[in-house]
Amino acid sequence: MERYNLITKKNPREIVLLKGRPCAWGKCTFCDYISDNSTDDAEMANLNFQILSRVSGRAGALEVINSGSCFELPKSTLYRIRQVIKEKNIQQLFFESHWIYRNRLQEMREFMGIPIIFKIGVETFDNGFRENVLNKHASFRTPEEVAFYFDSPCIMVCIKGQTKEMIDNDIRILKKYFRMGTINVFTNNSTAIQQDAQLVKWFLKKYAYLNEDSSIEVLYQNTDFGVGD
Ligand code: SF4
Image (cartoon, rainbow, N blue to C red; front, side, top):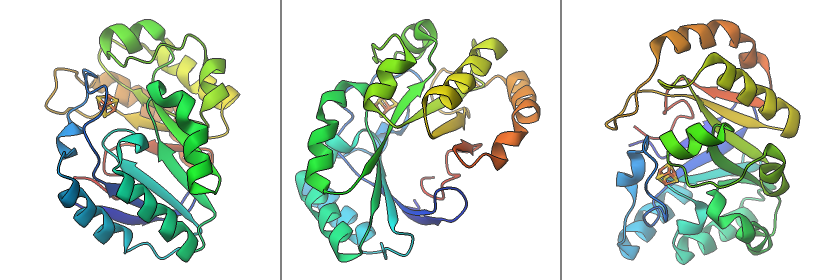
């Protein structure tokens, strides 16, 4: 599995995919990537330190992802990230966190000592679909609540059961309330959640212009950031 890449297009940054402890929630119906979690501290440290040793600082920015939230990375890995930030003169960090950790974001900002763009897997601002179909366990009711804590939502589009109106609304919210965001076009995996091929066709045509929007990154495959498998 590829675990390091340099993103050169929008928001240039190095990106690393590290291993963390099991996702504290772990029950989203569309998620099958928690198999990359571990409970073996030595194994995680070994792998994570090796991947972090590839960070050069050449983009001045680093994104760290794991199959879960940054708060599930082992302590030793967090210390190593902080060390890499200092040694490689990194000015901007990107982390991802579930809604359940919203009150700990400031703690992480203080620990790392540099600005952090916090991403959150919102998936959709349609509260019913997010909670009843995707089982996301993110209890916010409004975009303003999310924007109070987080900088950059990730939304997921083209899932069976979604409507064009829901997707239009999510993209409108992304542009209105947030300075950046990620749109994942859902691809079938081992879960029962299915892609809607008609929605994909429609989305690709209607939202092709987002490829030129510097504030939105559209992932057509899970591996579009150059990490994962
Ligand atoms: S919060 Fe993220 S890692 Fe955890 S189950 Fe949901 S999608 Fe998977």
